[in-house]
Length: 298
Image (cartoon, rainbow, N blue to C red; front, side):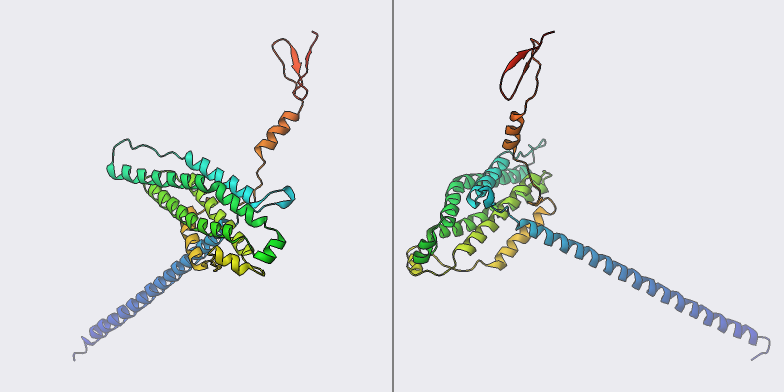
């Protein structure tokens, strides 16, 4: 090899080595950056997943937190159920679905089906309201002596178990209606609130059944046989699945029962009890409490 070309060869070889080393460093840095980004994404996704899990748990808890009867105020489960059912019926009847400006047959059919499902829930609630409230009343007012000899009121407990089936069907109808209307651009917040109430009332039924169907009795087996009542535990797996379906629809629209709402009737009575001077056209003042009118001397 020529001594003059030796430095050139060495320079070329050195250049290749340096270029290779630089490439390896660049690849290593790129891999590290990718790994860091991947780790950040995983951490972010895990954090988001944890937050969603917490939110779901919160919603599930609120859905199961039905309004309890305050016996010190004379409240009963039957009374509260009547009130909640009446609230659902009234609010569902007020739900309005916008008409399509541009007629789209698919949307029209979908909305009509949703309206039909809502109407069916209203009719079913109206037809069962008094019957179910009466069953709750009968079960909870059963005397101790009667329970000891004949066991719990299996007839009305059976009615409440049947209502659980109806309630589940109504919940699923509202879920379908909400999903359909939401997909077609409708506001479904009012429907979601009624769905939450139906789910909470379901918890009331389950609690009443579980509380009252157990206990020792001398001849309860006879009453159970005559009423064809099966004292089977409620399937919690199915219940959890139903709750998850509701949570997926309701999301963050539930307001828990922790907020105390002032009774509008009591407020009105209190307002009437106040003495408020009110000027009349003749220059008189009226005492609202007594109804007396006095004329002011100018």
